[in-house]
Length: 447
Image 1 (tube, helix red, strand yellow):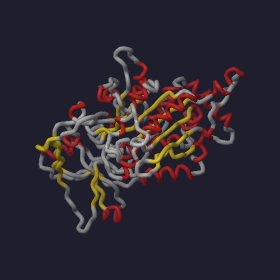
Image 2 (cartoon, one colour):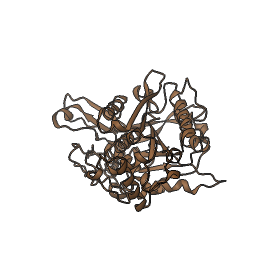
Image 3 (cartoon, rainbow, N blue to C red):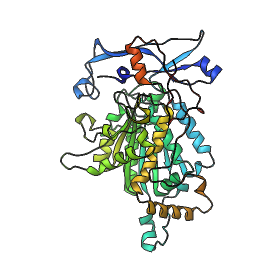
Image 4 (cartoon, rainbow, N blue to C red):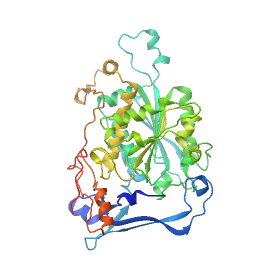
């Protein structure tokens, strides 16, 4: 199969000398990049192999040239911006010790992995309350506990360890949902969020690209997961089923990275025999959202289900667990082919911004009417009179996140492709400080 490495994607590089002396983080680097089939045959049967329609009959080779400009330097290279198990734990600790955010978060260990690591699960809702606030003018029929029980939304991520974009988007989601904006307060007041940020801690910790320690792709085990061999999938599926027995679970989103397509997009679950056009609405709204539209391409979304995907999370959750709005959110390893970021790599700040945009779109989907949204906001304020959200953004129709500053290098990959084809004389990648780059205006790389 073709790779984004043949369409301008560059690896990321970290120079310890540059980090110590100039505060430079991970940057795009490399020239003369090529990805091609080699003569070594690949004999793999079952899911993920050539006979499943997913794999290839041969192995592939990636080659590129790096120029090391600092004598005695220690340099790290990676496919994409790293996000380790330690990063995950550190972020959780920050959320759980923050006086503002910890009121809304309940943390527990869903299960232990094969190597004994924690598979964490978070429950996020306003002040831990499981009921909706009483609406102004509400009567006893609309104010009782049964009618006020909050609905639930599930997020999971990082089932494939090499797809670090999933964790960066998840970080954006978590920071948004635990923040002090009006939008975050409304979402927490409307829903209970169940989140498993890292479905494959073993794979992340031990450096696997796609598999768990049991040697399988965990995103092909959802139909009949083993409690002993695939505990994180087994217990996540059980948690969704348990929660569904208590309340209405209205959406499930599984976060991934994609190595062969540009942009951010979604896979959903439609049925040729019984079409469900409703499953296209949320992705379409993401593409219209003021934040999401910078990265998200509805044109790249797909809602058909191939046979090889029938055991994946979104398909099993949609068909077996009965949650039609079940999606895979895919973020490119490369960049965008449209909009303000056209021909530029995406970086970790862009992925976090996409996570924020996804959350913001939930309000567009579930509270599309501006008057209805204001009415509900009034109920939230009445239920929490001591907290004044006026310091946060207002309630615009298309979201109110605005542009966030901060990014690692996002070099021009069209120029990188041109350099690769022309001999690679130019080096691209923007070494930047996280306080100086506005992600709304991608900076061109210097030669």
